[in-house]
Length: 83
Image (cartoon, rainbow, N blue to C red; front, side, top):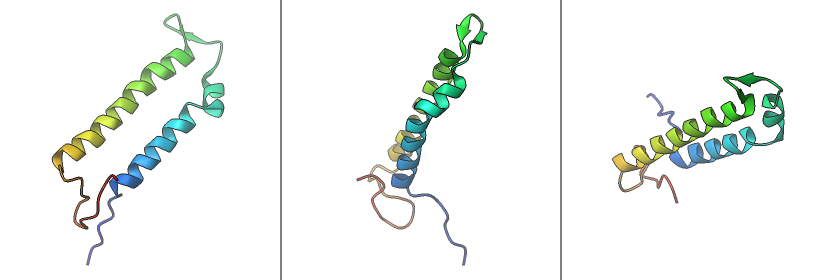
């Protein structure tokens, strides 16, 4: 019997939140913070202008998933996805 390997929605939210916090803190920002400009703007500005829409898109995907499952349940197990 094949086991369903989907990640529960609650776990996915936690993973994406932690990734967002890490990407906006010191180690990653210091890597991006260079004296390099691209189209006249610092590289850090491009990092934010690219990362922010990506994070909004991920939130949209989670909201669309919840819109398809209005009761907020995960796939087949019947457990609540978000509490």
